[in-house]
Length: 234
Image 1 (cartoon, rainbow, N blue to C red):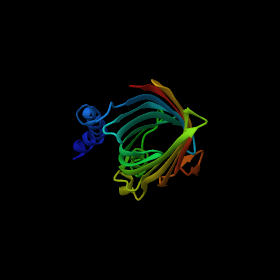
Image 2 (image 1 turned 90 degrees about the horizontal axis):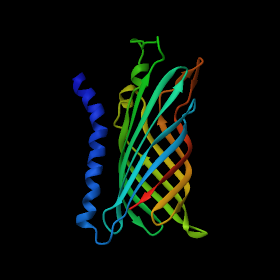
Image 3 (image 1 turned 120 degrees about the horizontal axis):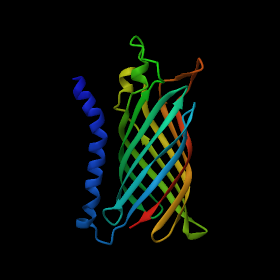
């Protein structure tokens, strides 16, 4: 059982990403107009209430039908806290129906957490801290957004929201709840083949385990910070 758990823990994100990448070429068969795909690099300077970390990764989106598109996102970064290294990996994918000034859709989010203690330290087997600090968060979410032009056709404002209403991850077994809501607000400059966006991302979790720093417990229910995305359009 333990071996199956380990395999499942690391295979689920890979399966999720593979399914998304397989879905992108569907536009070749079903699109009734020339499709468009965006590929960008994204960075997020995130604050988890104790430390800051620079998370980086990629964003890929593709239009399947005239008003239906899919998007996948991957981010990874390390938080350093008193010598410990806490690695966060985000896998998100969604399918949405686009309207003139916005969209609505649904997706799946997987947040993988791995904590390595500073050299010379080991986990205390009598405490649940190891499980709390390595618990993954994953589940379905609903998404909606608005956008519109600002001053000229190349400049747009964007507002995106998501609600992961159920956490099927490991925190539930420990008496916590990783379900959360997120908001992204920003501006995008787009041309025929290039785009650049700047904004701010805010995530609010229902009940994450607190962390001790210098003997003081800190709330870890909020992650927030500025982000930037730059990429090409096909």
